[in-house]
Length: 109
Image (cartoon, rainbow, N blue to C red; front, side, top):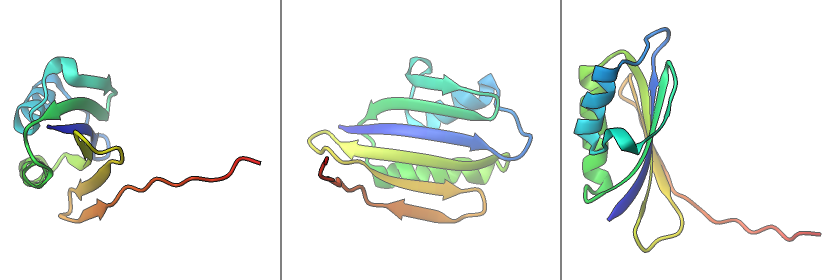
């Protein structure tokens, strides 16, 4: 099981719509009740899935290829028995950035 937190940001003045939200949810594996925040230009969903992060990345790339009105899809994820999430961001222009999560402790003085 993988825990996901996904943000979809629209490009420029392109507004989200219900049909697009539903299509993205179907492609990435989240349902209407997994949507945490809806704004005019941004959507955030939090959910669990059996889909591994590699497949999720391919699915996000596919969505961006068929929807040039989306600016980026930011995917934070962690496996069931891990405490630190990793992340990747897929951009509308084809760039992909991968991030490794870390825990940082600072002494409180």
